[in-house]
Length: 102
Image (tube, rainbow, N blue to C red; front, top):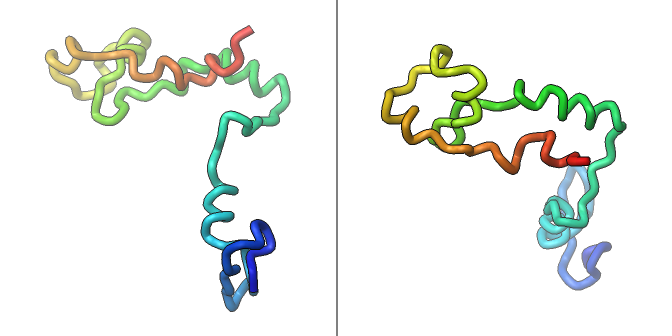
C-alpha cells in the first residue's frame, strides 16, 4: 500500500495503528520551518516579555551565561573565576521577549 500523503513510498504498517504515512512524510511533518506559526494569546506573549529574566539558565552547552551573571551573580552556582571571566551572552537570540519585539 502506498503512503496516503506522498503516494510515492510504501506506507508503514503498525499493528496498533494500521497503515501510517511513510518515514519521509512523518519526518517532514515534525520539522519546524520558517513558515511554522506559533498561535498564542497576546497576554501570554506579554507575560513572556515581562518574565523573560526568569527563564535564563546559568549554563548553555557548558558555557557560563553572562546574562545570568549580570542578573543574579555567581552566588547561586559553582563557577570558577576563569568561567566568570570567559562568560558569554549565550541566550541572546533565544530569549522569549526577542520573539515579540514591538
